[in-house]
Image (cartoon, rainbow, N blue to C red; front, side, top):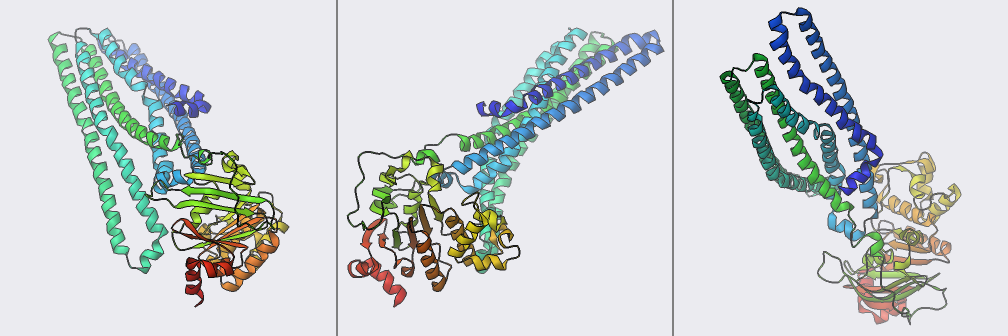
Length: 578
């Protein structure tokens, strides 16, 4: 609720005016039965046609002003609800952008999509109807009861019985449905996840002819969602007939009592109208509470993302800083000052039972190229994720330029690093826009230099528009190798102090890979370079190579040394060159 009030502050005017105009409409509506009573009890018996016409015009006037008030209230409530939803989406998006990788892994992509779309829409609809009805409906219900006592106190006791019964029914159904709506949204997460996986992996599904099995899986998931929605829908649908039964019983009681007490016809009609108004408003209130229940369940799910986590991006960078870092005895001191120091670093994913890295120590100096090689699952990518502060280390320390990584502002830290991941990701837009993600104000000359070093200059020049060439969704208009080279150019455009290539040349042929390494070596003379690869050819020319197996260092040194001293490295080399 605190977040709700905070986000609604820019829309305070709309939040106040919407219910006020609805209350104004309700006031006019409550006056209608009194006018009808006057017509039937006074004007008609007196035969005063002029007064009857005036009373009719008064009824039209009440209806017109009520309609204008209702439309005005709808405008302000819709404006406040859509504005709040826009603010909430922005907060969610910014929050997701700052989530640590641990947070993203824990929450999951599909549920984040659902919360950004379906849940926000539920909250928007709930807020919209709440601003219009939350005050109006209770005002009509209790106002009608009070007006009934002014019409005929002897028959008004029926209202005092019917209203508590109806409220008990409404809140009982609300109590039952609210947790079920949360289950509906959670199941919707599963449907979204299934849809996303099938869209992402459609080529794999078709290649293995798994369309039928995937359809069956989706139908099963969708069937579960349908079951939850049907169950909660049946409970909610039970509300209307029950309220109608109670209200109609109240109407029968009013007609009986007014007939027994010889109440005037105008009073009987007014009391019946007030009971009908209560019926309509309680049905509205019931639907409102159901929507509020759905909105509350969705808001709770959104708040789970918005609330601070122990593994937030900033917190993920916080590590102990006790004592100086151990130096790497094998470091070649012919290079510059230490750029990166790993001091007995261990790491474990929250979802994993064992450590991904154990006791990793090395020093990477400026001007030096470090190759990291190992089999699948050896911890290569995990190591550089730690270097970028994307995951927290379980033990040990990481220093950048002699400073503990936890003392850096995340933005400052990331500006030092140019990171090219295994999967090349380009965004819709132009080539220039993608390259400038590395450096906002990079000149075209700098971009062409980066493209040349990444062996991607010819790729871009052949495209219509050059740097202004369009990049489609998921860069489908570029091949896998072209996407990798553009990703490398994006990192080089930043001119980073630490360049990390995480298996970034896997889609390149050996000649292009060799030319790329030579260009990077010539360009990044004062930078520290980390090359991660499963191919020996990509790391064999590095100044030093770190060999990993099961998250542990099993060898370190130059290519020739490791061939003699490290069986794991020798096995990888032999499998690729013999």
